[in-house]
Image (tube, rainbow, N blue to C red; front, side):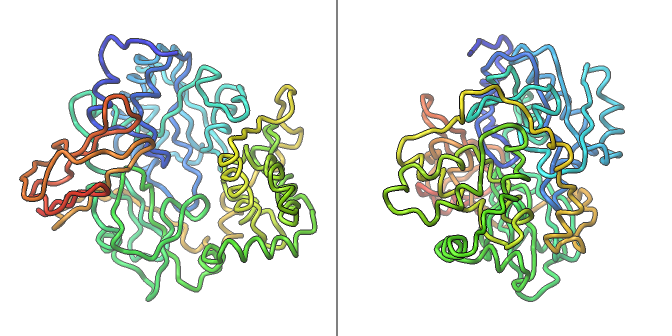
Length: 444
């Protein structure tokens, strides 16, 4: 499925360190080496309270579309599509201003969760269903987040990835979207949004549905940080996420009554995939003998979290059980693709979609839903901590030593040419104060 790209864009993507900016972090030069008929810009952004993709489109639509054109050129695709929610009027206006000259088809999507999932998006835009446990490439499609496309357009002119667009929202004084130098601490980023409005905040990195919970303000911004959502320490979501997995399993084992709501509202199940969280929950009570096969109904789960945080009337943890199931199957070297039947969406799929506003209401975060406009300030951090694994694949290895002077945009770490990964570039000019296998610290 690979091909030589005449203009060498994949080489420039690799040298610039472009990876999936929507959260996955997959090196884009590998994805764009495929041959497909359709490329899709993913601007669906469905995580509650996150707005960075819409802000990127409103402020940098022409560059995003240039990136989409480059994706089509690299992959040989003749069809260029843009998936975006119909409610994003400002972003759509910008796309309509620049899109026609680039032969881009706009696919206007409903305000549902999780419209940004690749399986959902590919089906909504093309009508195609990705094979179970498969990739969009298998149905002739490449999908990229809009920020990834922006970075690709800039990589074509020699600009490496040194900054990340991040929405700071929730319990902050001034919710906003920033373009932040890589390696800036969460604490510094939050202060730019006016600081926390609660005394003891907890931070959801990447969103409240599919993100992770931290309280460490010293953590650095990376290439896959999409948003920081602050909530009070005593918020119900924080309490739920903080519970140990052993407790989650024990509660599920004793309380699950097999109502199957988790399955009946599962987005992947409704697309026709054999994902059945209620059966995974049932097997929490199986013996060790059964644990070798109990997990198969969770293997095609996309971990959207809808079952745990919306569907279950008893507030159990089917998503976490599915996560454990997938991990167990990886350990056993097993993979489940479901029964050998043609894929067909559930007849009630459209009627069972979950509106984002209704989800936010259930989560108890509707009060925090407000605009997070782009703030284009210049950042002058005192230091940055640049992690060497900000991408899928092998971590990068340092090319600099303590005491070295570096310039902004200089490559300071790289992976071997035969490894999956991406280089890391300095986001500020300064002096290297430490360089380890994990991170490089640069002081301005």
